[in-house]
Length: 64
Image 1 (tube, rainbow, N blue to C red):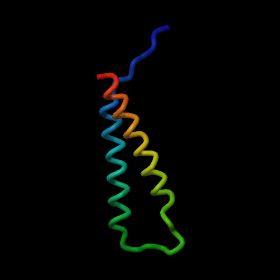
Image 2: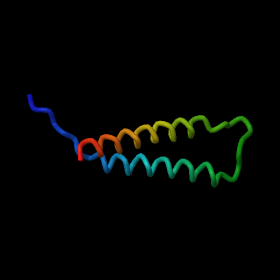
Image 3: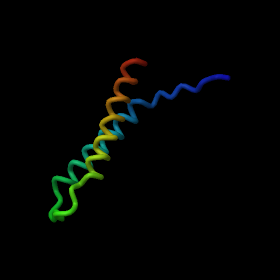
Image 4: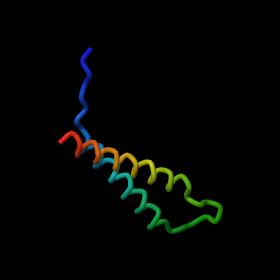
């Protein structure tokens, strides 16, 4: 069985970086901050996107 090599690491890194920038922008421009809303979901999304960005960049460098 032949393994399919996926070489879209640059695209994945770009998408993860876009998600990080988008979430930080949304948090920075929020006009109303609810006291009960600590933004944990936003921080979780940013964290997961950063891990994906780092992994994609490492994979991009290793395969290059």
